[in-house]
Length: 441
Image (cartoon, rainbow, N blue to C red):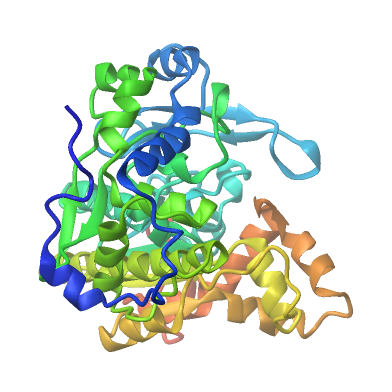
């Protein structure tokens, strides 16, 4: 017997939300039977491909990722033709979890980095990541715990796993890219992609632990991975399991509204509005529903991101560690900023790091760099258009030139943050030539 997805909603949430629907205009809100069918239609294309799942779970298969019960997946060693000028990129991972360390791996490490593929350095070789460029320049190692596809929450889980161990570091750099906040609240990120986009060698984005916000207290809520065993993951190759697992998920309801303009669960939209503090969502037409719920989805995700980073900062501070946040961007956002924010940008450019989040970092006294400003400053020195400028650095992710740009864009602030400064930036009163710890004899 199916549960009614409208049941069990806290009435105070509805009172807080106060979403406006003009009298007599409610065609976008579906009746229960229609809503159930809409949810079925949305979920049906996402039934897992059995072979892709079997390969993913096979420890000997030559695929990009491997199963993890908490974050859904981690990465395997890979050699892929996805690099600059059609080259292959070699990405290896230490037995202890971080990406292979090239520079000064024999030296003590005091800097760890966390984030998604722009931290991992996807589409760049082991020696080409911004961490290795900085490590080579600083004369000391930097660990790279980035994993492609992770959100803020999943990267924070990785931080919480490693920082209390011997691999922990005094200085922690947390890179937040693009839609990382949105990924944090997805129970199954693949549902945000065009149907069946992931399969075979690049299979990932299976269900994972994720974050939500308590609508009454505003506190962060840790949600479980609904497919935290290989057997549960295999069950998602069956439609009824997919449907029963995700039919009542609030974010699924939001995604349907964003794509179709139809509301399958009004209570879910009200709860998101209450958490985000939004009171004037327009649900009067299909197009307005799409735009309104998209903005609501983004605002809810930013609230979750703030709660996650509060927890990260608190835990690191209690452990005597220091936190630095980097805000990075997809290529279109850099183009948009360098081109002077043209109104005809297609597709629409999302504000991934809105003023609300920047002010949150400032209020919490978390040091950060908004790296789009670094790009705009450099672009002003060029005599090319914004598109050509972005193509110098991006091939989807940063190419090696982009990695180098990013490393030196953040270099000065990181040097000032570290105490003592990196060996190559030692106090001028010290000897010009130093041998201890670096040169034999």
